[in-house]
Length: 350
Image (cartoon, rainbow, N blue to C red; front, side, top):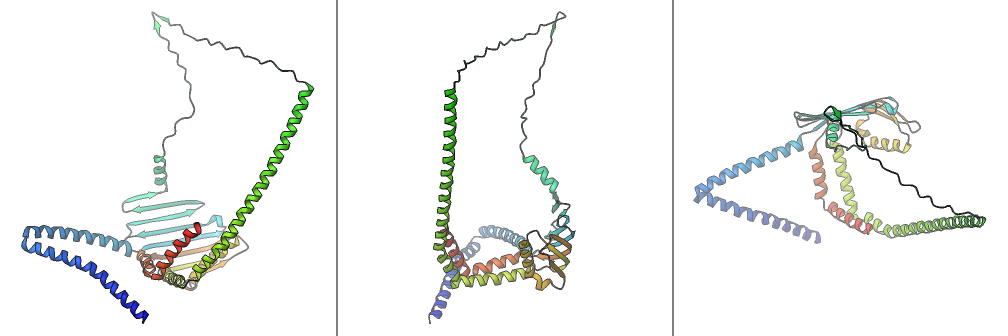
C-alpha cells in the first residue's frame, strides 16, 4: 500500500509541474491570437518576429545536431622495431565532413602536428611563432660605454680637450691592536663554547623534529580510525551500491559504442616498471573479448621492449557521452550519492 501511495504522489507531482508550464504558455498563445485577430499591423509584426525567431531556433538546432551526431573519425598507426625509444606513430582525425581535420605524428623523439579549421591551417611552427610574439621583448642587461670625441675646428685650429682630474682620498688605516697570549686563549675558549652550543642546538632541533613527526603520525592514525566508520557506512549504503551498479552498467554501454570498427596488430610490450606493464595488460583485457580475433598482445614483465605494428580505425559520436551523462543524472540513486559524496568530502576536509 505504501508503494502504491508513493507512486500516486509522484504522478500528482509530475502533473502539477506540467500544468505549471502549460497554463502560462496557453495564456500567452491566447493573447497572441487576440492581438493578431483585432490588430492586423501588430499581427504582421508578430509574424515577422516569429519567423525570425523560428529561423534562429532552427539554425541553433541544426548546429547542435551536427555537433552531436557528426562522428569524429580517427586512424591510429604505430610501429616499433623493438626499442621503446624508437617508437613511431601517427594519428589522423576528421570531424564535421572534414571541415575540421588534422594529424599528430611522432618519430625520432619529435612530435609534429597539424590542424585544419576549414581554410585555416595551424601547426607546431605557427604555435611557436604565436607564443614568441606574445612574449615581451627583453631589455639589454649590459651597458655599453661609447666614447665620442667631437673636434670642432674654428679658424682652422682644433678646440682643446677638457679633462677632469679626480683626486683619490687617502685611505685611513686603523691602528692594529697588539695581540697577546691571553687573547689567543680567550679566542680558543670562545670557539669551543660556540661549537658546543651549535651541537646542543642541533640535538635539540632533531629531538623536536622527531617529537613533531611522531605527533603528526599519531594524529593521522586517530583521524583515519575516526573516519573509517564514516567511509564504511558510505560504501555499505544500499542506495550508493545501486548508484555504483548503475554507473558500471552505463559505462559498459558507453565503451561498447566507442569500440573501434577495425583493429589489426601484433604487439609485444614491456616497461621498466612491471606494474606499468600489468596496468597496460589489464586495460587491454577489458577490450580483449572484442579484439581477440584481430590483434595479438604479449606482455613481457622482465624486459623493456616494444615490438610490433598496430592499426586502429573507428569513430566517436559525442551524443553517446550526452546519453551517458543523462542516464546517470536521471537516476535518483546517483543524484543522492553525489550529494552524499560532497557532504562526505566536507566532513573529511574538516
